[in-house]
Image (cartoon, rainbow, N blue to C red; front, side, top):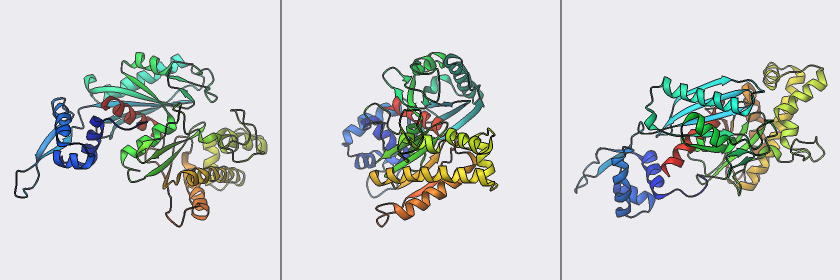
Length: 379
Protein backbone atom coordinates (compact mmCIF):
# COMPACT_ATOMS: atom_id res chain seq x y z
CA UNK A 1 0.00 0.00 0.00
CA UNK A 2 2.96 2.27 0.02
CA UNK A 3 2.52 3.07 -3.67
CA UNK A 4 -0.12 2.95 -6.37
CA UNK A 5 -2.21 -0.20 -6.56
CA UNK A 6 -1.73 -2.68 -9.41
CA UNK A 7 -4.61 -2.84 -11.89
CA UNK A 8 -5.69 -6.17 -10.39
CA UNK A 9 -5.75 -4.77 -6.87
CA UNK A 10 -7.45 -1.61 -8.13
CA UNK A 11 -10.28 -3.64 -9.66
CA UNK A 12 -10.65 -5.81 -6.56
CA UNK A 13 -10.81 -2.72 -4.35
CA UNK A 14 -13.46 -1.20 -6.63
CA UNK A 15 -15.55 -4.37 -6.46
CA UNK A 16 -15.13 -4.56 -2.68
CA UNK A 17 -16.26 -1.00 -2.08
CA UNK A 18 -18.94 -0.66 -4.78
CA UNK A 19 -20.44 -4.15 -5.13
CA UNK A 20 -22.62 -5.27 -6.73
CA UNK A 21 -21.04 -3.69 -9.78
CA UNK A 22 -20.91 -4.47 -13.51
CA UNK A 23 -17.84 -4.65 -15.73
CA UNK A 24 -18.91 -1.47 -17.56
CA UNK A 25 -19.22 0.35 -14.24
CA UNK A 26 -15.79 -0.94 -13.20
CA UNK A 27 -14.27 0.52 -16.37
CA UNK A 28 -15.93 3.86 -15.69
CA UNK A 29 -14.88 3.86 -12.05
CA UNK A 30 -11.25 2.81 -12.54
CA UNK A 31 -10.50 4.48 -15.88
CA UNK A 32 -9.37 1.15 -17.34
CA UNK A 33 -10.56 -0.03 -20.75
CA UNK A 34 -13.37 -2.56 -21.07
CA UNK A 35 -10.89 -5.08 -22.53
CA UNK A 36 -8.54 -4.64 -19.56
CA UNK A 37 -11.43 -5.13 -17.13
CA UNK A 38 -12.44 -8.33 -18.91
CA UNK A 39 -8.87 -9.66 -18.80
CA UNK A 40 -8.59 -8.91 -15.08
CA UNK A 41 -12.01 -10.17 -14.04
CA UNK A 42 -11.76 -13.52 -15.87
CA UNK A 43 -8.96 -14.95 -13.65
CA UNK A 44 -10.53 -13.39 -10.55
CA UNK A 45 -13.65 -15.45 -11.28
CA UNK A 46 -11.67 -18.63 -11.96
CA UNK A 47 -9.65 -18.12 -8.75
CA UNK A 48 -12.87 -17.75 -6.77
CA UNK A 49 -12.02 -14.25 -5.54
CA UNK A 50 -15.03 -12.73 -7.30
CA UNK A 51 -18.49 -14.13 -8.00
CA UNK A 52 -21.30 -13.20 -10.38
CA UNK A 53 -24.41 -12.33 -8.38
CA UNK A 54 -27.18 -11.63 -10.87
CA UNK A 55 -27.97 -8.85 -13.27
CA UNK A 56 -28.68 -5.15 -13.21
CA UNK A 57 -32.11 -3.74 -14.02
CA UNK A 58 -32.81 -3.50 -17.73
CA UNK A 59 -32.42 -0.06 -19.30
CA UNK A 60 -33.56 -1.21 -22.71
CA UNK A 61 -30.46 -3.15 -23.68
CA UNK A 62 -28.79 -6.32 -22.46
CA UNK A 63 -28.81 -6.62 -18.67
CA UNK A 64 -25.35 -6.33 -17.14
CA UNK A 65 -23.88 -9.12 -15.02
CA UNK A 66 -23.01 -7.91 -11.51
CA UNK A 67 -19.88 -8.82 -9.60
CA UNK A 68 -19.16 -9.16 -5.89
CA UNK A 69 -16.20 -10.16 -3.73
CA UNK A 70 -16.25 -13.73 -2.41
CA UNK A 71 -15.36 -12.75 1.12
CA UNK A 72 -14.63 -16.34 2.20
CA UNK A 73 -12.11 -16.95 -0.59
CA UNK A 74 -9.05 -15.63 1.25
CA UNK A 75 -7.99 -14.76 4.79
CA UNK A 76 -4.96 -13.15 6.35
CA UNK A 77 -3.58 -12.92 9.87
CA UNK A 78 -2.48 -9.79 11.64
CA UNK A 79 -0.15 -9.92 14.63
CA UNK A 80 0.55 -7.06 17.00
CA UNK A 81 2.98 -7.28 19.86
CA UNK A 82 4.44 -4.98 22.44
CA UNK A 83 6.03 -5.27 25.82
CA UNK A 84 3.87 -7.79 27.62
CA UNK A 85 1.06 -8.56 25.15
CA UNK A 86 0.19 -10.26 21.86
CA UNK A 87 -2.92 -9.49 19.78
CA UNK A 88 -4.04 -11.55 16.77
CA UNK A 89 -6.69 -10.68 14.17
CA UNK A 90 -7.97 -12.70 11.23
CA UNK A 91 -9.62 -10.78 8.39
CA UNK A 92 -11.49 -11.95 5.31
CA UNK A 93 -11.37 -10.55 1.80
CA UNK A 94 -13.95 -7.91 2.68
CA UNK A 95 -11.53 -6.60 5.30
CA UNK A 96 -13.92 -7.70 8.05
CA UNK A 97 -12.43 -9.19 11.21
CA UNK A 98 -13.75 -12.74 11.62
CA UNK A 99 -11.73 -13.62 14.70
CA UNK A 100 -9.37 -12.10 17.23
CA UNK A 101 -7.44 -13.02 20.35
CA UNK A 102 -5.35 -11.21 22.91
CA UNK A 103 -2.98 -12.65 25.47
CA UNK A 104 -0.40 -11.57 27.98
CA UNK A 105 3.25 -12.48 27.63
CA UNK A 106 6.20 -11.95 29.95
CA UNK A 107 7.74 -8.53 29.44
CA UNK A 108 11.21 -10.11 29.47
CA UNK A 109 10.45 -12.74 26.81
CA UNK A 110 13.34 -13.09 24.36
CA UNK A 111 12.61 -12.70 20.64
CA UNK A 112 12.68 -16.39 19.74
CA UNK A 113 10.33 -17.31 22.57
CA UNK A 114 8.02 -14.40 21.70
CA UNK A 115 7.85 -15.45 18.04
CA UNK A 116 6.96 -19.00 19.10
CA UNK A 117 4.16 -17.62 21.29
CA UNK A 118 2.91 -15.37 18.48
CA UNK A 119 2.85 -18.22 15.95
CA UNK A 120 1.10 -20.54 18.38
CA UNK A 121 -1.56 -17.92 19.16
CA UNK A 122 -2.09 -17.25 15.45
CA UNK A 123 -2.44 -20.93 14.54
CA UNK A 124 -4.76 -21.55 17.51
CA UNK A 125 -7.06 -18.77 16.28
CA UNK A 126 -7.15 -20.13 12.72
CA UNK A 127 -7.87 -23.66 13.99
CA UNK A 128 -10.59 -22.48 16.38
CA UNK A 129 -12.43 -20.79 13.50
CA UNK A 130 -12.20 -23.83 11.23
CA UNK A 131 -10.47 -21.89 8.45
CA UNK A 132 -8.94 -24.05 5.73
CA UNK A 133 -5.18 -23.44 5.67
CA UNK A 134 -5.30 -23.24 1.87
CA UNK A 135 -7.42 -20.05 2.17
CA UNK A 136 -4.85 -18.41 4.47
CA UNK A 137 -2.67 -16.31 2.19
CA UNK A 138 -0.30 -14.74 4.66
CA UNK A 139 0.31 -12.76 7.81
CA UNK A 140 1.27 -9.21 8.61
CA UNK A 141 3.26 -8.49 11.75
CA UNK A 142 2.96 -5.01 13.24
CA UNK A 143 5.92 -3.90 15.32
CA UNK A 144 7.14 -0.67 16.90
CA UNK A 145 9.54 1.27 14.72
CA UNK A 146 11.97 2.05 13.45
CA UNK A 147 12.14 -1.05 11.24
CA UNK A 148 14.72 -2.37 8.81
CA UNK A 149 12.43 -3.43 5.96
CA UNK A 150 15.23 -4.89 3.84
CA UNK A 151 16.13 -7.35 6.58
CA UNK A 152 12.59 -7.66 7.94
CA UNK A 153 13.89 -6.72 11.36
CA UNK A 154 13.44 -4.20 14.13
CA UNK A 155 15.88 -1.32 14.03
CA UNK A 156 16.85 0.60 17.15
CA UNK A 157 14.14 -1.02 19.31
CA UNK A 158 14.53 1.32 22.27
CA UNK A 159 11.36 0.11 23.96
CA UNK A 160 12.12 -3.58 23.29
CA UNK A 161 15.65 -4.38 24.49
CA UNK A 162 17.16 -7.40 22.79
CA UNK A 163 15.17 -7.07 19.55
CA UNK A 164 17.57 -4.86 17.58
CA UNK A 165 18.36 -6.64 14.31
CA UNK A 166 16.25 -9.70 15.07
CA UNK A 167 14.91 -11.11 11.73
CA UNK A 168 11.28 -11.00 12.80
CA UNK A 169 9.69 -11.39 9.36
CA UNK A 170 11.67 -14.49 8.47
CA UNK A 171 11.36 -16.11 11.90
CA UNK A 172 7.61 -15.60 12.16
CA UNK A 173 7.05 -16.87 8.62
CA UNK A 174 9.02 -20.01 9.47
CA UNK A 175 7.23 -20.55 12.80
CA UNK A 176 3.70 -19.93 11.49
CA UNK A 177 4.20 -21.50 8.06
CA UNK A 178 2.78 -18.57 6.08
CA UNK A 179 4.28 -15.77 3.94
CA UNK A 180 4.81 -12.78 6.21
CA UNK A 181 5.12 -9.03 5.80
CA UNK A 182 6.44 -6.63 8.44
CA UNK A 183 4.84 -3.25 9.16
CA UNK A 184 5.27 -0.24 11.41
CA UNK A 185 2.48 -0.58 13.99
CA UNK A 186 1.18 2.98 13.56
CA UNK A 187 1.08 2.69 9.75
CA UNK A 188 -0.70 -0.66 10.06
CA UNK A 189 -3.29 0.83 12.41
CA UNK A 190 -3.98 3.66 9.95
CA UNK A 191 -4.31 1.24 7.03
CA UNK A 192 -6.85 -0.76 9.02
CA UNK A 193 -8.93 2.34 9.75
CA UNK A 194 -8.92 3.33 6.08
CA UNK A 195 -9.81 -0.16 4.82
CA UNK A 196 -12.48 -0.92 7.44
CA UNK A 197 -14.62 2.04 6.49
CA UNK A 198 -14.21 3.91 9.78
CA UNK A 199 -12.14 6.52 7.94
CA UNK A 200 -13.01 5.71 4.32
CA UNK A 201 -14.27 9.22 3.62
CA UNK A 202 -11.11 10.88 4.94
CA UNK A 203 -8.74 12.42 2.41
CA UNK A 204 -6.05 13.17 4.98
CA UNK A 205 -6.05 10.86 8.00
CA UNK A 206 -3.77 10.71 11.04
CA UNK A 207 -4.00 7.73 13.40
CA UNK A 208 -2.15 8.39 16.65
CA UNK A 209 -1.04 5.02 18.00
CA UNK A 210 0.15 4.58 21.58
CA UNK A 211 1.50 1.46 23.23
CA UNK A 212 4.78 1.78 25.12
CA UNK A 213 5.83 4.41 22.58
CA UNK A 214 3.85 6.80 20.40
CA UNK A 215 3.56 6.73 16.61
CA UNK A 216 1.27 8.15 13.94
CA UNK A 217 0.11 6.50 10.75
CA UNK A 218 -0.79 8.86 7.91
CA UNK A 219 -3.12 8.13 4.97
CA UNK A 220 -3.18 10.77 2.24
CA UNK A 221 -5.70 10.32 -0.60
CA UNK A 222 -6.05 6.65 0.25
CA UNK A 223 -2.31 5.90 0.24
CA UNK A 224 -0.34 5.24 3.46
CA UNK A 225 2.69 7.48 3.89
CA UNK A 226 5.66 5.16 4.36
CA UNK A 227 8.62 7.50 3.88
CA UNK A 228 11.93 6.71 2.18
CA UNK A 229 12.77 3.84 4.55
CA UNK A 230 9.24 2.77 5.48
CA UNK A 231 9.54 4.44 8.87
CA UNK A 232 7.31 7.48 8.53
CA UNK A 233 5.20 8.15 11.59
CA UNK A 234 7.74 8.40 14.42
CA UNK A 235 5.30 10.87 15.94
CA UNK A 236 6.66 10.35 19.44
CA UNK A 237 9.85 12.12 18.42
CA UNK A 238 8.30 15.43 17.48
CA UNK A 239 9.73 18.03 19.83
CA UNK A 240 7.06 19.60 22.01
CA UNK A 241 9.36 21.11 24.66
CA UNK A 242 12.83 22.18 23.53
CA UNK A 243 13.95 22.41 27.14
CA UNK A 244 12.33 19.15 28.15
CA UNK A 245 13.81 15.82 29.26
CA UNK A 246 16.25 13.77 27.21
CA UNK A 247 14.46 11.15 25.10
CA UNK A 248 15.62 7.58 24.54
CA UNK A 249 16.32 8.54 20.92
CA UNK A 250 18.95 11.04 22.13
CA UNK A 251 16.83 14.12 21.41
CA UNK A 252 15.43 16.52 23.96
CA UNK A 253 11.80 17.31 24.66
CA UNK A 254 10.29 14.66 22.36
CA UNK A 255 6.58 13.99 22.78
CA UNK A 256 7.33 10.48 24.03
CA UNK A 257 9.73 11.79 26.68
CA UNK A 258 7.23 14.41 27.83
CA UNK A 259 3.87 12.66 27.48
CA UNK A 260 4.38 8.96 26.83
CA UNK A 261 3.40 6.23 29.30
CA UNK A 262 6.91 5.90 30.74
CA UNK A 263 7.17 9.67 31.22
CA UNK A 264 3.84 9.79 33.05
CA UNK A 265 4.78 6.83 35.26
CA UNK A 266 8.13 8.43 36.14
CA UNK A 267 6.49 11.78 36.96
CA UNK A 268 3.93 10.04 39.18
CA UNK A 269 6.68 8.24 41.10
CA UNK A 270 8.66 11.47 41.53
CA UNK A 271 5.60 13.21 42.99
CA UNK A 272 4.23 10.41 45.18
CA UNK A 273 7.12 8.06 45.85
CA UNK A 274 5.01 5.21 44.46
CA UNK A 275 5.34 3.26 41.21
CA UNK A 276 2.12 2.95 39.28
CA UNK A 277 1.25 1.79 35.76
CA UNK A 278 0.04 4.28 33.16
CA UNK A 279 -3.26 2.40 33.02
CA UNK A 280 -3.86 2.73 36.75
CA UNK A 281 -2.89 6.39 36.70
CA UNK A 282 -5.45 6.88 33.94
CA UNK A 283 -8.14 5.10 35.95
CA UNK A 284 -7.35 7.30 38.96
CA UNK A 285 -7.53 10.39 36.74
CA UNK A 286 -11.03 9.40 35.64
CA UNK A 287 -11.95 9.28 39.34
CA UNK A 288 -10.50 12.83 39.59
CA UNK A 289 -7.57 11.95 41.85
CA UNK A 290 -5.67 15.29 41.68
CA UNK A 291 -2.11 14.10 40.97
CA UNK A 292 -3.17 11.55 38.36
CA UNK A 293 -5.56 13.96 36.66
CA UNK A 294 -2.92 16.70 36.50
CA UNK A 295 -0.37 14.35 34.91
CA UNK A 296 -2.84 13.01 32.38
CA UNK A 297 -3.96 16.48 31.41
CA UNK A 298 -0.33 17.49 30.90
CA UNK A 299 0.22 14.44 28.69
CA UNK A 300 -2.91 15.16 26.65
CA UNK A 301 -1.95 18.82 26.21
CA UNK A 302 1.49 17.88 24.92
CA UNK A 303 -0.03 15.40 22.49
CA UNK A 304 -2.50 18.02 21.27
CA UNK A 305 0.42 20.33 20.43
CA UNK A 306 2.04 17.59 18.33
CA UNK A 307 -1.24 16.72 16.59
CA UNK A 308 -1.78 20.40 15.75
CA UNK A 309 1.64 20.55 14.06
CA UNK A 310 0.87 17.51 11.90
CA UNK A 311 -2.61 18.83 11.09
CA UNK A 312 -1.24 22.18 9.94
CA UNK A 313 1.48 20.64 7.77
CA UNK A 314 -0.70 18.00 6.09
CA UNK A 315 -4.16 19.62 6.22
CA UNK A 316 -5.56 16.68 8.18
CA UNK A 317 -9.33 16.19 8.17
CA UNK A 318 -9.58 13.30 10.66
CA UNK A 319 -7.64 12.13 13.72
CA UNK A 320 -8.21 8.71 15.26
CA UNK A 321 -6.63 7.50 18.51
CA UNK A 322 -5.70 3.81 18.68
CA UNK A 323 -3.49 1.40 20.56
CA UNK A 324 -3.54 -0.34 23.94
CA UNK A 325 -1.60 2.47 25.61
CA UNK A 326 -4.53 4.88 25.78
CA UNK A 327 -6.72 2.62 27.88
CA UNK A 328 -9.78 4.08 29.58
CA UNK A 329 -8.39 7.62 29.55
CA UNK A 330 -8.61 7.98 25.74
CA UNK A 331 -11.64 10.26 26.04
CA UNK A 332 -9.54 12.90 27.82
CA UNK A 333 -7.06 12.92 24.93
CA UNK A 334 -9.89 13.21 22.39
CA UNK A 335 -11.40 16.19 24.21
CA UNK A 336 -8.05 17.94 24.62
CA UNK A 337 -6.93 17.41 21.03
CA UNK A 338 -10.31 18.42 19.61
CA UNK A 339 -10.38 21.61 21.69
CA UNK A 340 -6.93 22.70 20.50
CA UNK A 341 -7.71 21.95 16.86
CA UNK A 342 -10.99 23.86 17.09
CA UNK A 343 -9.15 26.92 18.39
CA UNK A 344 -5.78 26.82 16.63
CA UNK A 345 -5.92 24.75 13.42
CA UNK A 346 -4.69 27.16 10.74
CA UNK A 347 -7.35 26.39 8.12
CA UNK A 348 -10.26 25.81 10.50
CA UNK A 349 -12.39 28.24 8.51
CA UNK A 350 -12.15 25.89 5.51
CA UNK A 351 -12.95 22.65 7.33
CA UNK A 352 -13.01 21.10 10.75
CA UNK A 353 -11.15 18.01 11.94
CA UNK A 354 -13.01 15.01 13.31
CA UNK A 355 -11.33 13.48 16.36
CA UNK A 356 -12.36 10.06 17.65
CA UNK A 357 -11.39 6.68 19.04
CA UNK A 358 -10.76 3.56 16.98
CA UNK A 359 -13.39 0.84 17.16
CA UNK A 360 -10.42 -1.56 17.32
CA UNK A 361 -8.68 0.35 20.07
CA UNK A 362 -6.58 -2.43 21.61
CA UNK A 363 -5.74 -4.42 18.47
CA UNK A 364 -5.86 -1.76 15.75
CA UNK A 365 -2.36 -2.60 14.51
CA UNK A 366 -3.19 -6.32 14.27
CA UNK A 367 -6.32 -5.56 12.25
CA UNK A 368 -4.36 -3.25 9.96
CA UNK A 369 -1.52 -5.73 9.54
CA UNK A 370 -3.99 -8.39 8.37
CA UNK A 371 -5.35 -5.91 5.81
CA UNK A 372 -1.85 -5.10 4.54
CA UNK A 373 -1.04 -8.81 4.24
CA UNK A 374 -4.20 -9.33 2.16
CA UNK A 375 -3.38 -6.42 -0.10
CA UNK A 376 0.21 -7.58 -0.55
CA UNK A 377 -1.14 -10.93 -1.74
CA UNK A 378 -3.79 -9.43 -4.01
CA UNK A 379 -1.35 -6.99 -5.60
